[in-house]
Image 1: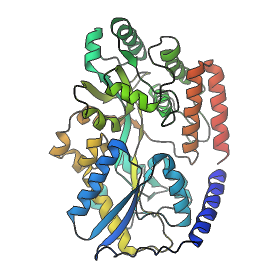
Image 2: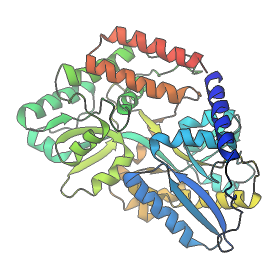
Image 3: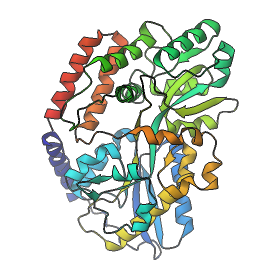
Image 4: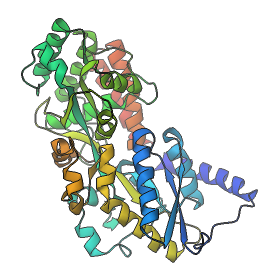
Length: 423
């Protein structure tokens, strides 16, 4: 934890200096016409943001005890701002934390354990895996809003025009289908983003991570103390990603996240990989005939990278019991109305939500809801966020430069191990 502890000290110092010159009055627990006012920072933008904002509006309208105010924070700035606020004990009353980011904050006592505040009846309604992923050393530090695995999108019309009669499942089937599409149509077979634009090339890491598990391996070893991908499984995964661009020319080079998504939206691409959050956006495109299914076992058995948005309650300088109770009510309402969030594409975590007719009536979701069963838990190490971003940068370089696979894996292993050792 060396690196993260130093970062927290620096951020806390900055926060204290900033706070020292502030004259803003802290909000009381009942300063909104008698209602308890809660504050929330949202990292959701685009289609996600619209659905989430609608949920907050619906929550506020559903009762007259609590009012939730929601401030948007740009995703790229969210965790820097959140880490600063958590260190200074000035964070909002409720925050969203990706499950993979939780080890950092749990270890530093920034999040309130929820065991004494959440009823057994509520806990019993959650799917086991995403709920247990929020426990650390036996204590519950957040509640999961969703599971959002990477899934496989394909354009039905393009496959039909190309004469691809079977949706590919294996690595070779994908190559064969891509070549057929390239030869028989004017469409682009693959749109896997592989360069930094709006975001890092996270899709490369998500697929590499998934492919390791599909072959029976893992990205890190069992106790998350070292890289575990410098082997034949890692080579298989890397070479397939490189060959799509450099050998078969069926995936454009220098393709960033936004461009890849827009190409699929415009009906220019046959095969696309992204998280379930893209579904809601694709549904709005008139005439786009697509399917969304769990990530196939391209390298072996089905397994897929997945994230999870979770709700947590920060530790404050002055913890208000009334606000804690109100925050639990808010979290309970939001998770138990997951059918509204599923409109954005996410997989609900509450068992009761999956049984709602409103959820069952949503198209596509039933097609990939089972993806949550093969979703991979993020490695429980405070180093993961840095590993995730750095690996994305390295894979971007290896694909763009078509680096010798063994040279690439040696370098990536050394870099990941160095990152782990710095924490």
